[in-house]
Amino acid sequence: MVDKQNDYNENQIQVLEGLEAVRKRPGMYIGSTGPKGLHHLVYEIVDNAIDEALAGYCTEIEVEILPGDIIRVTDNGRGIPTGIHPKEKISAATVVYTILHAGGKFGGGGYKVAGGLHGVGASVVNALSEYLELTVYDGTHIHFQRFDRGNYSEPLKIIGDTDKTGTSVLFKPDPEIFQETTVFDYETLLKRLREQAFLNAGIKIIFTDKRNESEPVGETLHYEGGIRQFVEHIHKTRGVTPLSEEVIYVNGMEGDTFAEIALQYNDTYNDLILSFANNIHTPDGGTHETGFKNALTKVINNYGKKFGYLKDDDKLLGDDVREGLTAIVSVKLTNCEFEGQTKGRLGNPEVRPFVDKIVTEKLMNYFEENPTVAKAIFDKSVQAQKAREAAKKARELTRRKSALESSSLPGKLADCSERDASLTEIYIVEGDSAGGSAKEGRDRKYQAILPLWGKMLNVEKARIDKVYGYEKLKPVVTALGTSIGEDFDLTTLRYGK
Ligand code: 1YM
Image (cartoon, rainbow, N blue to C red; front, side):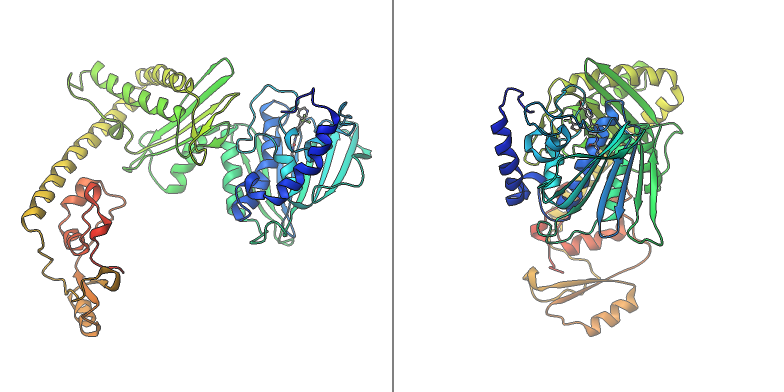
């Protein structure tokens, strides 16, 4: 934030030194100068447009990749203020694009998307661009300014009339900075823009790749259903079948803090919980995710108790109630605190009881109003609990067994004589005849052959208790020597390749 009491000189020094500092150590501001940092430039500008949408003034954002990997982002918001900044004596828009710490909005209030950079995004993008052109439509005039590596020779100027309002920013990332590549990846940008469209229901993001002039490609990302459609999209793209038709959605607001959760179960045994704070993905979870998980476990257990499906001392664990779950947890607050090495976890302690309360109350209500869905979810959790117990037994059995017959290798394995695993290879072949010819051609000092028959289990899709019990898999596990699941130990691997 700019301290309005700061005097003119201080900001003038910042213009010169600030952007120079960004060019000298770009990694400090955008993480890296590799592809990740390159794409980050787009997110920074788009985030400003999304902030304008969250403030309620912008409904449409256009993102274009132009020939030469030039990016243009255009919104239909109010337009960055063009008036002369009283202290700086230059246009406010110029201040936003040239002064490192002027990114945080002057006005204050409202949610700010910019997580990593705390709103210094625009000037950082400017500093790291070979050139950047800023156009502001204020409903009367079109204002324009060009920058070269952050410097400008002319002030923001009126270049025409308009009845539109909005902001348009065109920039070309500087190849002197992004030495590895300045080529944008369509799918990377699409994924991020789609995510933003899901997280901000109703915003329309029009994305077009115009690099191939004769054949532009793109997509309009516009989801009135918001994060509900995010869950549907995940299930559709992963090709999994939902347990019930409808995505469950709950939300709540307290003061300036808003939370919304969408969830649906599917026919797999994996869970996927994606959490966000102010539209920023929190891959390491945090207080919002913990609040949700606790509440979910509590509600499903309470449901089982209330309807007499669970005995007093019987309890479903978190892992049981999350089997096959896809959920989006999104919170918006005015003071996000990100924690951890990579700032991937939300820290605000007040968010945990807040999310817990919303989910507990509203999911309980949902279960009461939708008994069929509730019972299906509960039964699935009980199945998971049973499988967990079966897996535990199977694991104990394998442990006891392997303690007895410790070093017995599968009969069909043609082992190699070398014992140093860094030098050895195993070939897993199908059937005896393949095994036979492989054995003839091998170097028996370094190469081992293991023939297998019949249909192998897809362990990625199967529950762990089934994996433990699968006879055809046992020779593979014993030959590799690492065991599986909780007992997995890579240091006992018997072959290097
Ligand atoms: C294509 C990128 O930057 N849009 C944008 C930015 C701003 C505003 C509107 C805006 C904000 C405010 C008031 C406010 C910004 N303004 C500033 C600052 N699109 C894009 N659209 N009026 C307009 O926050 O009070 C920084 S960003 F600081 F000048 F107000």
